[in-house]
Image (cartoon, rainbow, N blue to C red; front, side, top):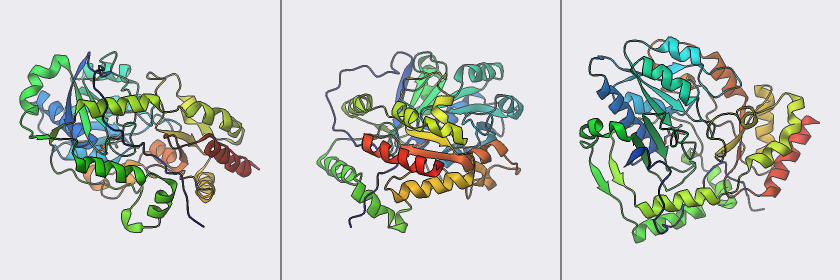
Length: 384
Ligand SMILES: *Cc1c(COP(=O)(O)O)cnc(C)c1O
């Protein structure tokens, strides 16, 4: 039998479309494209350091559950990442009191990370930042549009156009800089080399191959090749930052395609609501009151009552041909190589509990209603 499995993430790469629309951030922010979201974040950290020339050994706050790229971006600028535990073991957001406690005279920025479409509480974080002369960086790599675009509440905003992000342009990132900062930041930004990017025949070939790899057959096949390290969470160090000029027609296509994408979270939420009785938590329902609602979630997230049930469910979904998974799998401090970059060892109980219970389900454009039916029956079987 031909193996088939629905991939966990990954939208199709679009073809460029006629540019003409205004991007959602353009009223308040100016944009610098980079080769990745990690580079954009690192550039943001560079600017935060530049704002505070008095600080000798800069520190940057970030959540204790998240992508190891966050750590790489901070370390690449010679700053120290300081982790803040989550609010509780059913929230992907930082503990507000923990943020205040972690601030020292050396802190230069707070990275507020949106989680799978759930934005951080930017307004209250911005008040804390203003009171302490810190820059607020919204990392919106997993949320589109960013929660700050209307209000301009974050000083800097990071976007990613990588595989597995809301808009997939086969890589790339963007740093949005609030327009009132532009004059004083331009001299720090312009030192980074600018590479021209063209939509060449080679680009078209790459796109075709890339989109072919998204099929159920390709995913099942690639999963059998351990050297691909598919879906593995690892720390990759960041070497340098380069600006690129992504054609406007391509960004336009990415945004339009994202807008056309089906919204799956309501259907998931309806179908899986019966799991509430068995101690499961539907994360997106719990955090519906946040700003930025109306965005589409990147993956549908649930918390199992415990790790055993989560792992059993992941096994059952995968057997049924659905790549459900635990996302990063561990708290950030427990990912190999991250611990030694943090300085003194500490534990993050909420992040660890959250990591042990989290299960994520696909929400991309390759998902069908039949898949969600199949997922629902996996859950009913477990409940029974
Ligand atoms: C993926 C991701 C990044 C890094 O983006 P890349 O384009 O993959 O470098 C940064 N922050 C968060 C929250 C992410 O999910």
